[in-house]
Amino acid sequence: MSFEGSQVRGSTSIVEKLVTLPFQNISHQLTTVDCQPTLDGTGIVVFVVGQLKTDEDKPHGFSQVFLLKFVDNSCYIANDIFRLSLHHSA
Figure (cartoon, one colour):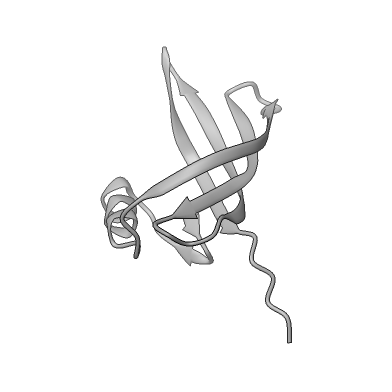
């Protein structure tokens, strides 16, 4: 998983990263969700754009892309990239 430029691998490390984030409450409002099957037919690439609100902060735009891979009759997230849409100006 890539979260704001930080790379984390493995389910244990991902959970540790998520529980140490500096907020208590979070809500999402999705704007668009685009999906495409992979060329080899073993998964789906998903691209999400929306707004994220944490605690009492104002909403921030975000984008996320992840790869769902199929295994037997289920699927798992093979790759996940999340980025807040913050624009820093000089």
